[in-house]
Image (cartoon, rainbow, N blue to C red; front, side):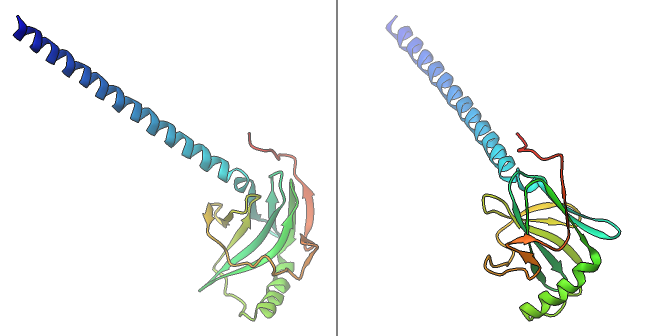
Length: 182
């Protein structure tokens, strides 16, 4: 009888151990799922303002739009053999600036003189900016948004076409579809 009791106790202990191990495994799975969900939420929040900054071309204009509720400083990045950043200034919240393509050419020439860099043979143009959290982003001409470490524009370097840090080259228009994204 004592032998049966010992065997029964061993079986109960083994089942208890298996149930405990299964419970620990399931708890770890839930924790992993919560961590992955938290990371996705953090990434979405990190991209919230950046996803509201865009640019596009029209026959006569290049348009830069800030649909966020915070101002954003922008730079154009010209890609040829190297990437050459050129600061344009700040776009106020919920505004778009329409810059005539013909106005950009003298700006490129002036910027080339200021920085003592040759005028780039442009293969691609992108928009670089910092969001309200100070994170650097780049939006390619195809619309892809990427977080980057930096884009090579010193905060002390000023655009000769700006006034008090705001874009003065171009026409501003109000945007109606601005939000916090929440």
